[in-house]
Length: 173
Image (cartoon, rainbow, N blue to C red):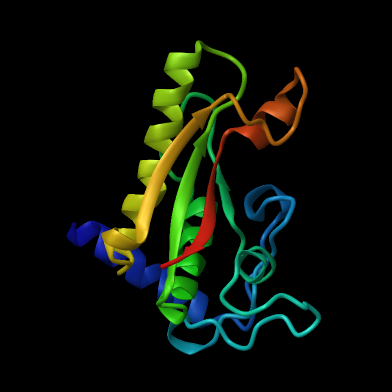
């Protein structure tokens, strides 16, 4: 636990030293890019070019990123995934009335049962990271769709990589 705290603290220090944090298309998802992060890891003014209503799913997608990606047959979080989840935690602290459902997904390889379990492990990994980042567990639910809801249809590594994901979906209380 202390190690996680140190990692989170180091990440916040690193992020607060930057004016902006970019997200590559792979990590922020096809929908997301990073917003501006101010001192102490707080989200500064939202992207002014966006017409997203503050505190909504669209706001999260545009200003924070709503998804993280995983390696084949893995549920551990990469450093890029952790950075996205750090931004999500900051966003969730700003919008305390927002709850989320984290959807776990897998690529098409493997059995339905195996991929449902893998999707659950991925969603749980993201949930646990947000909880460690200070978000109350009662605000986060998880669901696994396994391979049933691909983001990209295709039989190649590029498609599979986009389907191995956890997506944070905003709900209200």
